[in-house]
Image (cartoon, rainbow, N blue to C red; front, side, top):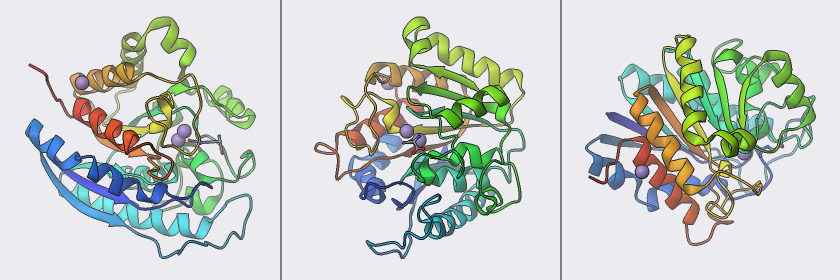
Length: 298
Ligand code: DIR
Ligand code: MN
Ligand code: MN
Ligand code: MN
């Protein structure tokens, strides 16, 4: 593969500062060497920044820091689009999960029927109306299917970027009431911790991929929120939820994705070095990238 790595230094999509340093933490954990050792080419495109200072203006409590989140995501969507034009594999490092709005907007310029694997403790399907927090990192999937504030929905290109039937959420264990309604209304595929416990990760991943292949997707994006894993393994996240996916199960999931040959882009988000223990969470992110990009023991 020829990979282009884009860091997004944004922490204003949620309320715990420091996740803007996620890309640095992941670089420090050795992402470039790890991916090159597998035999891929990787170009570090540097970070997308925002001139917000420490105190962003908190104008709208229903959409916290909307202006900064919009600005950053516009830049990201442009960047992703240009990386795709060079036929490179986009690898995005967060930053909080609101950056998926820009990632998916950029990807939607090339992929018209793209599948999305959303590996997360949360569903990220809130709108400005249903959000209990006002944090935009809880909204990117809703925004990308065309629900919520129109300034977010129409970012980079007008309207829906991905189809609800092309989404598979894996690892969910914290879903808000408005999100539950939207999941039911649209029939979005969700494999919660219950299904992972009951059927095992192999079955869950096979079902997820079969579903996307059945929809004849033209690409598959992996959006991996490190809070999908149990906080035991990834303590450096802003909204940890106990009872998560294990380290081994997550490696297995990445290996199954790699074996499928279907993944066309990926993002790793919500690494917050301020909340972390000796960069443990960034280390896990890089280890999982190893599996996703085809690292083999023998
Ligand atoms: C919660 C938390 N559902 C919200 N969302 C998170 O604020 O909308 N997503 N942490 O990853
Ligand atoms: Mn998330
Ligand atoms: Mn999450
Ligand atoms: Mn592995």
